[in-house]
Length: 293
Length: 111
View (spheres, each protein chain N blue to C red):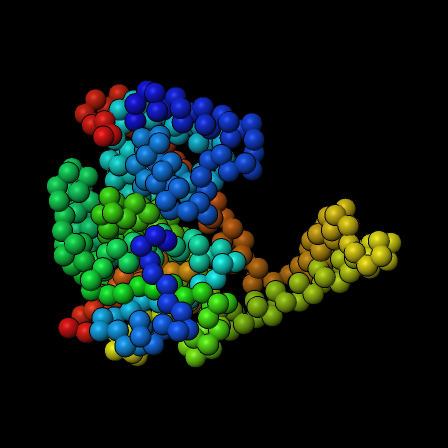
């Protein structure tokens, strides 16, 4: 990324800050050809843009922080190769540490070795990628859900980022799968609890609807059958109150899964964001990084 | 979805059931957000297996016969066919690596 392109991207971010919800910055729903155009326009690798979109969302401050921390001449393709390796191998947050099976670990490691070769500019054939994915898939079939989920991170990364730039962003999905599998293991979640939780969820929903119903009726009566915007806002509030009242009157350990999943989501974004900033700051001043062509 | 062709009620038999190579069909809909989120992965899979397997999109609203015949209850649904038979089925969002692994198995089986 050149000085010129970095400044232009920062200008675009400031433009987005002035017009929230304007689609000035790309989002996950942006068509892939538009993402490709955006990455070309600003000189960032598509894999980098996809990670930024995935973990940044519409958080302008985070976009600004990441782009400001990019050193001039940064190779964002190499940066993402390092990010995915970090998310795999970091001793405190990496997916690899959740895998006890030595064969599965070795299969995962071999995929990141291919990524390193590709990032160094060496050609890795389709056959090599497929063989690595196949070996990983076979090894993952023999382990528990947590280890298989963590291996999913290696499976997500088992593609050439030049032809499949979204592969890196898929590691976030693998991290989610792994953390959710850990929650289910720790709660001894089973089909019986799943059915009970579904039944409880229906009752909560019914309590919320009952709470909001009178407001809907009043608004419809006052407005000739339609519910106005203000009434809809009050209905949402009453719905929340109804479900909270149900939970307070019927406490259950079944709600713990949802609480832990919400906490896991927060952890996923924290880890992925910190990792990206860690990689960009690590590259500051690295003169060995080749400029993007 | 520039590089992914579509199948319809009229072409499903010819393109999918009579295909000489394994086929991945992505049953999708205009209004389906998760389908759009999966679009880049489907493009990647189509590109990766070009010549070895076929990948098609099928809009369930525009093609109700195929939706009914194949028992599609929701979108996205991904079916993998080999020799006209369903060999794998995924309902809901899934990872490109899972789709790839299933398609690679079908390609190996077809050899």
